[in-house]
Amino acid sequence: PSLGLCAPTLEDPEFAAGFARLYNQWIADYCSPAGGRLRGVAVTPIEHGQSAIDVMAEAKDLGLVATLVPPALKTRNLDHPDLDRFYAAAVDLDMPLGIHGAPGIHLPKIGVDRFTNYIQVHCISFPFDQMTAMTALVSGGVFDRHPGLRVAFLEAGVGWVPFFIDRLHEHFEKRGDWIERGWQRDPQEYVRAGNIFVTCEPEEPILPGVIDVLGDDFIMFASDYPHWDGEWPESTKHLRTRPDITEETRAKIGGRNAQRFYGFNARPLSR
Image (cartoon, rainbow, N blue to C red; front, side):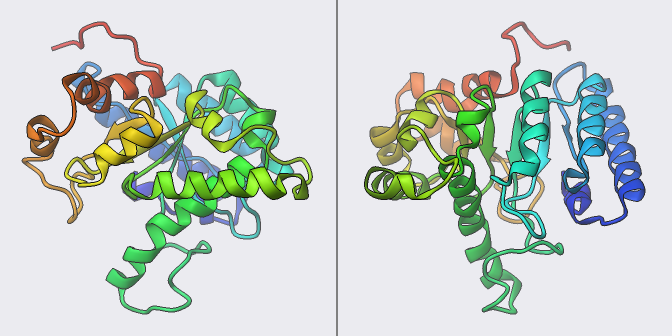
């Protein structure tokens, strides 16, 4: 939700909630005529406690299928105890969370402290912000406290994931007990348990290697439409035609994993 990426930065609680409600109603209305072929993602004022939970619940009633979460808040990481009520509500609502970087908004981000050029910041901030978020959620024990939580790490590619999961594994194995209230399981188990999903760019050359290391049950296709780094109108061409993945894997990445993440059933869509 590009137009709503600023929602977590809004400091006035009443204004932030009002902004999020307006955006969520707008995107729900926009998707409604499509008969289920378009599904909207909500924003919520995650900095503002119960208000964030209320807005998320209202978004679920509107038919929105996930809620945007930034990689970090202004003063807290995603494993902060203050957020446990929010995560518990997301599980109760069956509302998955999507983490999306936003280098142009006023939240802490990696890269802006060293670069002033947008493209340089973009190169750095998206994957490294996702690593920051994954570190907090995994090592901070969020998935242990909320085992039904589903989180997608969006639009930073998937090539970084095997390296980083392995790095987390090493730290869990050798120094995992250094984190109070932290992880209880090997990081790969959160992937296998369905807590972690990641979107890929369909032309990524490393995709078969990722599948070889971690499997294909957690990877989802992302078009990044209509942004400059997408391939519209040929968004699905690479996924449909590349010879180095199986048809079964293609079906999972192209749709079935998203059905699991968003909680869709497999019935035909309205036309």
